Image (cartoon, rainbow, N blue to C red; front, side, top):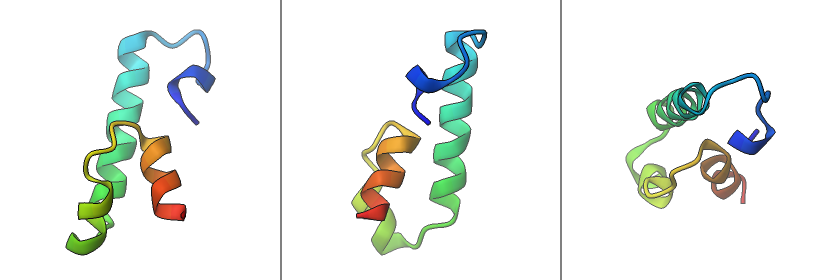
Length: 53
């Protein structure tokens, strides 16, 4: 879920925190080789999409 699809009652700061936590969780599960492929993504959704392809 991208930030635009998150509930409207969340502040921009809360949305950013959720995205950052999701990115961190994904990164912790990746090996070095795979991490290099997605490390520059700034959104958990884009990171996950890139991993899925």
